[in-house]
Amino acid sequence: EAVLSRATFPPEKWLSLAETLLVHGGRVAVFLVGERGLVTASLATIGTLEKIDVREYTLPKSGRRRAIAVYEKRR
Image (tube, rainbow, N blue to C red; front, top):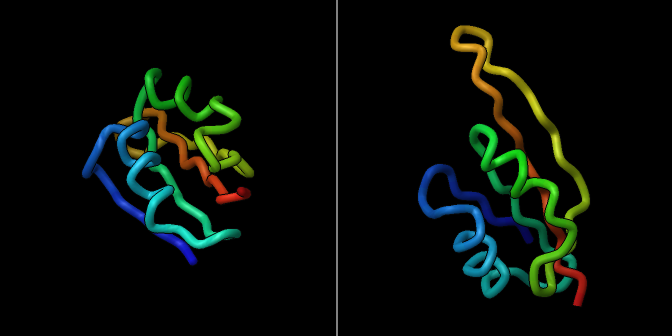
């Protein structure tokens, strides 16, 4: 129903792989780093995955920007 990976693959590759692991209605979380990651988080759909939420945050000690995007398998 849900798949997670942290720092294993680039976001686009992870979403392609996760899509094959999910059942209809399943969800995948993508942990994103820096400017490139925040841009990637703006992608609305990838294959059968539709973005349903993005949460941006800043790490307290370093001040680095991060985001978590959640996609759901719709088709």
